[in-house]
Length: 113
Length: 111
Image (cartoon, rainbow over all chains, first blue to last red; front, top):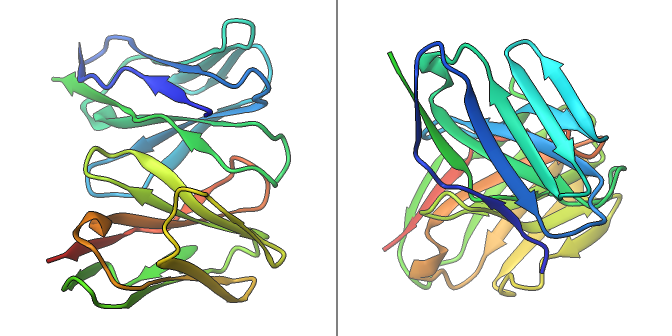
């Protein structure tokens, strides 16, 4: 069974620090990788996608992918209290529109002022 | 104008009842999904529907049935509700993989 593993946390960081969220996946054939943010009582929202090895930066967010190690991470620089949420890692075996996303159980991030 | 809308937002019902949750997307996406999020916040795929092709997660009880009258709608019908069905149900749509847009969720409570 395909699995996506995340440390459930909570991960607590001070405001302004770098938050590092990690995720591993079991299916070596996975091609597409995503990070979603979910505030309490709200729906998940896509914040990053990454498809090839290396780093991808978008504002304060950097996604890192290492397919050989089956590892994907999300770095949040200059963390703000508004970043406090649960971060969901999601993986798909397909690069097109056919596949379903397999989600990890999420890491709860708390940014302390 | 909401991209993916679900109704109702809250649903409280008794065991054994039959209920439906409606989902509509106005994004023109080809694929729609139903996910279940349990009390531990774990999101699990239930169904995906693409161009009239239904893909069912084999772990979903057959009391759950998706119904799609057209590309913009994917409703979820649940028969003989059980206590363990209590969860938040999310509808989502996508055009390309990963571009999921989620609805606001339906919190189902079975008493």
